[in-house]
Length: 231
Image (cartoon, helix red, strand yellow):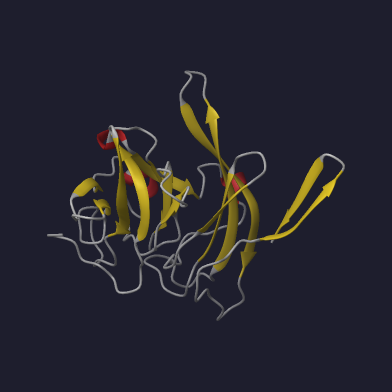
């Protein structure tokens, strides 16, 4: 794709998306590590491509809220590998998550049948500082977040940061789990509520070298009640 600078590490997410009346095999990818600069510099975009042809279904490269979410008013490189949800079979993905070079997780909302109405915004950290706990931006997300479905239908996102970053390079790395819940707002539209599950700061010199994995560790039935434990 012309004008895209990619990094060797991030891996694209292969999934399906709904485009008007069709369900298409698609590839979601970040544009990789670009040089420091403004929001239009290389690396500051996310692509959704048709898997069979390479056609661009949607390119996200205009971030109106960059002044709010960016470092010094900038959008940082999308260095992480994306993950789509749901990811199995031919069910079209309704959202995807991807990390950037300062430790944020962005949510791509693909629920609409018209890709021009899809949106992207920061899922983590939330605007509410209390909900973010002691999480500090600075270290990059360079691998794929893990997603899991809670029994109540909310999505749990788990990710970790490595030793690189574009701001606050002296900060330590960490692992984070948060819940991303779709709710109906007062205008009968769908919005998202984010809450912290846990935050694990790493010790000095420690950092993530791979993608976290969430698995169901135990499931047992008591009468008609099914109890699940996650790890």
